[in-house]
Amino acid sequence: MNPSWWDWNHAATVFPLLLQGFKITLLATVLGTLIAVVLGLVVAIIRRIAPTIIRNPVTWVVEFIRMTPLVVQLVFANLVLSPYIESTLAIGIWVLGIHYTTYMAEVYRAGIDSVAKGQWEAATALSLPVARTWRAVIIPQAIRNTLPALGNYAISMFKETPFFVVIYIPEMVRVAQTYGGDTFRYTESITLAGLIFLVASYPTSLLIRRLEKKLA
Image (cartoon, rainbow, N blue to C red; front, side):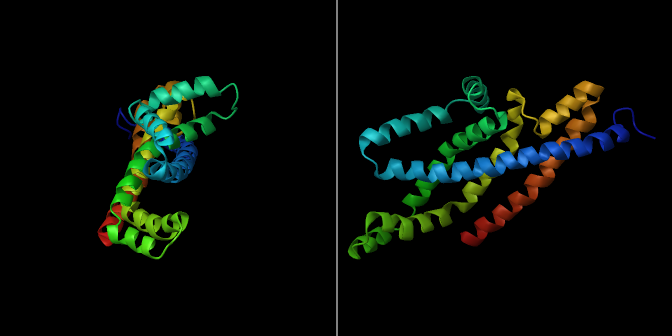
């Protein structure tokens, strides 16, 4: 017999729908992470070696994005770009990726600063070109030092995909809310959505913790 606050029939009905929403959540996380990982490295390098005329505007844009809420960025980008970009999901992914670019850029900056001074001096002594110094010496060491932090931001990105609800992307939480609105049964849908987030993110956080200890 079901308790009054929980109905297994509703749970069984909504679970497959949530898994469909989870696919969108996972896709947004993976693509958003790829965008942030690549652009974050580019921004970190620009802020390190670019002339002031380029570095200062990039720094201002980074700080502006970091200091404004993700929800506001999603709504604004959707209003501005929706007439030109048909896919709301694409808009959401790019906004999420660019938002986290600003955080990952700081992680890369710390990783670059952690490279021993002797590595820079050795590259100079060998007369390595600047591009090769970065590609073969600095970036590999910086990435190794920053992997755990990058992984933690990827998990944070995963947990912030529910903000896509403000631009009506049918990710998992949006599906849960829609089901609750249609059936007036929010308990099952929201609870199961939360459990799916937990099951997906907790093992990943443990793996990142193990990686952090291994690289320490």
